[in-house]
Every structure is written in structure tokens, then in C-alpha cells.
Image 1 (cartoon, rainbow, N blue to C red):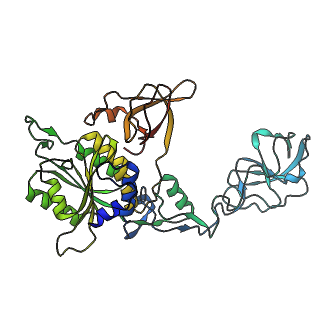
Image 2: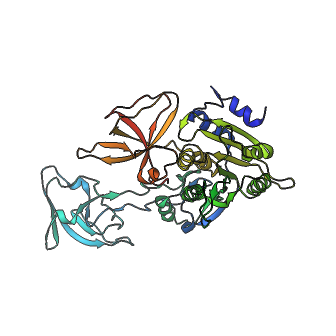
Image 3: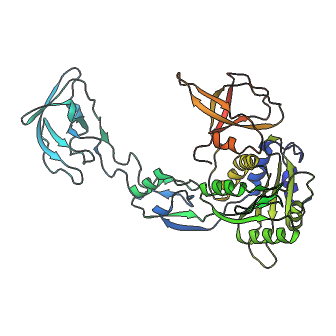
Length: 429
């Protein structure tokens, strides 16, 4: 038994003819390993990269107590419930430097947002709440409490404590956080390299003349888009004809230059082409029928590098040929596995709850992904309806949809107004 089959057989309920989506993800979690190589990059180049080590804050943020708004700083202990407070304005504190004056017993300091809180003060009243009378300011009763509108030293980040953890994908907020620590560079894992090609004699490349029985290759462009959204370096190998020599050359080139290989087409049970045979010849590959719709056939395994080429084998994802099935299997299985290879800590997708706007037929025993359009009704309720025809070749449905209605493995028929789970597309495809 091959190593791939050993891992698969160890999974509870393993049946290569009817694998659940859960078992596939469990298998992939054991199969893939994160890349090890790291590099330091400037913050402007770090967006979307995966943090390679914890970042410990070298400073306190903010570095001192400061005012959260324009107003007047004073000692909060002077406040009395139900009574106004009259104070003498003894100076002005500006952002960027400490105020060096003396507060006095009943003093207040006019203060700008971000300015250091003067010694002896702990509360700020917004300027629009007070009444000015020459050198005095009157604070109405009960408009502030002691400690209001003061930012505390280190309340955002404390020196010596972790600010970000390894495995985080760096978004815009994380870049700003790193900049607030004064860090111009950050350690990240190297970019993952993924090779892709389409297979089949019926596939046309853009620019080819139409011919009977042939279709233009859309999968290369959807896969390219989804990989690029993840920050992956894509190696596009185009369309490979169903010829053993061409397929072997493509697989060997991909395995030599990439961490993972994605193909579409040629993995269905009973297909007479050479793609499956070449996968078996060059690697340790399992062929599955997954209990899901769309996207039932799938191949997963490893393709070895050519003799004399160092490095680990490339992970193989052999996806179905139909356009929607390619996108759904990518979202359900390939994307989480690639995130782990990137060194990220992938979380389970957040599923929204929405009321179904229509009845849907569903047999227990398989997971179904219906293309859906989610909208918000006047009362705030989320409602979802399908895009109509759910055929796995109807790519226009993925353009119309803003999410996938996830009908789980043991779930049955859905009635109008039943609550269903939806995986939203925003930021993913």
C-alpha cells in the first residue's frame, strides 16, 4: 500500500468511492507541510504575506498616557455628582511634547488630541461640553467621569509582549500595527509556488480558432485569479494535450519548479485519457469520488521531482474539468491546504445564517454547494436564493452569486424560510 493510501485508509470511514468533505480535509491536513524558507521584507511588500515568527513589541503603544480628544485635562477627583465644576485654565498641552507647567489645586490644561496628559491630570472633558469664561472653564454636572477620554500607556501594545503571532496573514491593520512599533521590516515565509495546467484535446487556448466539440479554457483564468488572491506565485503551463510525452514533460517541469501542482480534467472514473496513467506513473496519487456536488472526482497525492533534482515532492491536486466544480473544490479543499503550506493558520470558514427564499431538494449523505445570492430584507433578516440552474458547467452562476449555500453531509431537503449556512465570496474569489 502506498504512503498516500496508508494515510487515507487511516481515516475513519475511508471509502475512496464516497469520501466525505470532512475526510478529504482531514487527509490534506496530514499530507501537506508548511514551507520552511523565510525572508525579511519591507512593510510595503508584506501585504498578504504570512508571518514567520512572533513579533514582540519593543515599545509601549502609546508610549505615555495621552488625551483621546481636544478638550481640557484635569484631576478627576475634583468631580462631584450632580454639581458643575469650575476650574482655572493654566496652560495648553500640544501633541508632540510634554507640558512643563504647574497644574495647581483647581487647575485645568487645554489639551489637544494625542498630547501627553500633564502631571496631576487623569480626565479630559471634550471642548464642546464646557463653558469658557476668561481664564476659567465650567464643566457641567455629570458630563464626564474620572478617567474619561484618557488613553493609557501601553493600552494598545505593551513592551515585551507578543504583538503578532507566527502564522498570521498580514492585512492592512497588521501593517499599521507593525509601523506603530517602528519596525521597517518583517520576517515572512517565502511565497508558495503553484503550477497549473489544463488537460484535454477538447480544450482551446484563447486565440485558437473555434472548432466543433471544443471549448475555450476558462479554468486557467479562474484558478489563476484564486491563487493570485492568496498571494501565491503562479506558474501557468497552459493547455497540455492528452499525449503521454507532453503530459510527462508538464508534470516533471511543474514538480521541478513548484511546491504544488493543480490540474483540471482527466480525473473522472473511467476516463480513457492518459492523464490519470501519467499521475500514477510519476507519483503516489489517490483517485477519489467525493460525496459532494458539484466536484465529485478528485485526485490527490505527490509527484516526484525528476532524477537528480533535489527537493521534496510537489503536492498534486487533480480537479474535475467542469468550471464550477473546479472553483468549488478549490474553495473547499485546495485553498485550506495551500494556506497551511504557506505557513498560515487557516481557520474554518465563517458561515453566515440566512433564510432560504426557496425550497431545495437535498439527499442526506453528500455535501452540496449551491450558488446563492444573499440580500438583506427591510427587517434586517438575511435571505438567500439560488442563482437558478446549478449545473457544474454554468460558470455564469458563479459570477451572479455572492456566496455558496452549504448543504451539509447529513442535511435533507430545505423548505422556504429554513435557515441555511452560506460561505460568502468576498475577499476569496
